[in-house]
Image 1: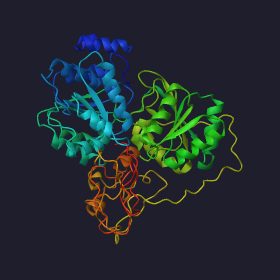
Image 2 (image 1 turned 90 degrees about the vertical axis):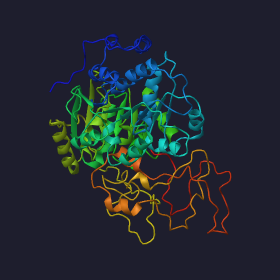
Image 3 (image 1 turned 45 degrees about the vertical axis):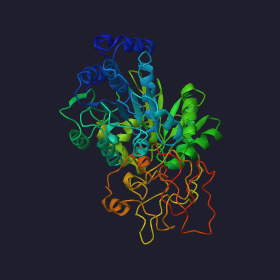
Image 4 (image 1 turned 180 degrees about the vertical axis):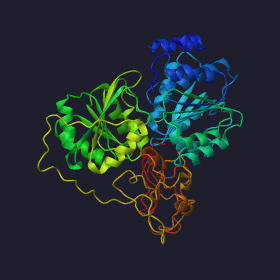
Length: 527
């Protein structure tokens, strides 16, 4: 199947307002991509839409442009404070920030207001912004629920709902949050689901949320761009770091995005590259939002040569004309391969994707080839001589597991600390978000939030979720989204059961719960 990359239409033929067309021209665009040409008229018609397009084809503008037009054409006499007219939900912080940036870019000549909220950052500025008039809200589900539960945001006025990356948003890791949010929305609204991939199961699930939806799909489902040259280097795991350094120097790659399966592996590879005088940085779920934002900015402006990332960065990472993507390890979920290499070959540009494959990963490779319906050629790395004494795989330092099971409850088998929640297996900390306590972004105290005795702390529905946890492999993004987080909304309660313990709540802004048995975890998920 040939994938369309150009259209004969111009943006001025799609019925968009003059102010939006001027902003599009300022951004340097004249012709819409296929997904934009097909989706924009359907969104403007006011009906629900299920749209599928491979990543990098401009689907964000496919819903941003018509939504800006609709809201501008039907202005309210008075925009209420903290009561958005349009809600855009995304699975990751990076994607949320980039969508809101697109809203500002294309709506700069319109009298519409927008903001973005996500976890991992101080909530107080978000609360302050939600107290002002608001037209468009871009959010990740976890932090949105936090604000909604505390009445910081009113979702009863939402006219248009967008679920971007809907395959993950509606997957088992997110469906509970989505249902809670849907219950807060008015029944009469326009629903738009955009995604790079759609399984038949996800489409069936989406049918229950949409009303007589239109369907747009400009590429075969779960396919990689034909503009991306894909190759495989067969190499033992122990030699991968040496080969990675060799490839960067041999081909003189100036900008390369490397995906690893684990956080620990990302850190080790970045350290190895820095040791070999290659500018590199790692980003993953354990990094603070500030560190991730800084690394992304340096990578985009060219001051950082190599960015090593886990799959949490596969969603929403938008870099113009990124030439090179490397799979240091193959992902456990074949669909994630499509998203990884979709970071290159975007919007008509060519790119290259190299995968370093150990023999133990051959089954994963076969699953990927089956999904994309093509065989990836295996090539020999020119000029590479394996080190006779490769650096051994250092054991990870022991760490306190997140969410120790209550007394008498066994830790689920197969859990691992060496991957981002294990190789596709459910662990105690990703068995659903419903078990997390309500959060309060308005308080900076994070200690003493529960009146339960140490060791008796148990999240809601923890046992039920453990029994009913699905065995389906989840992407790293879904596992990261599902991790328990510290309560932000529940006010601190007196330590009635610990009279001899000093109260350390005062002046502990941003500090994490020190209870070793607590299921709470500091640091933001990519909510």
